[in-house]
Image 1 (cartoon, rainbow, N blue to C red):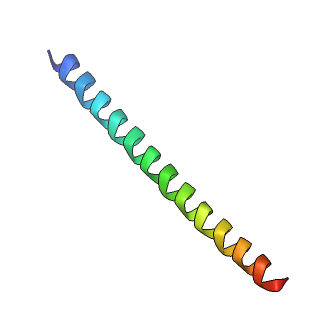
Image 2 (cartoon, rainbow, N blue to C red; image 1 turned 90 degrees about the horizontal axis):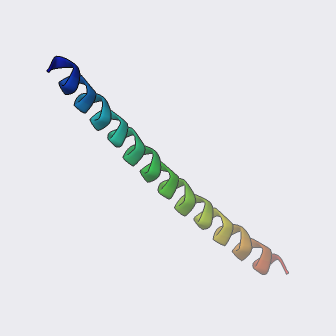
Image 3 (spheres, one colour; image 1 turned 90 degrees about the vertical axis):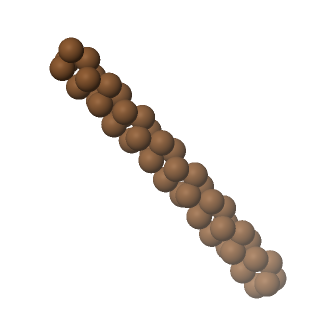
Length: 47
């Protein structure tokens, strides 16, 4: 019984970690896209 509860806790922790990692990836992607747009704008204004 205790082993099962520990397993459930472990899986919950894993799920949380996965969700957190995916969230961070999404934020990083959005940040990268913003930077890319800014760089493109600077390039356009330079010409």
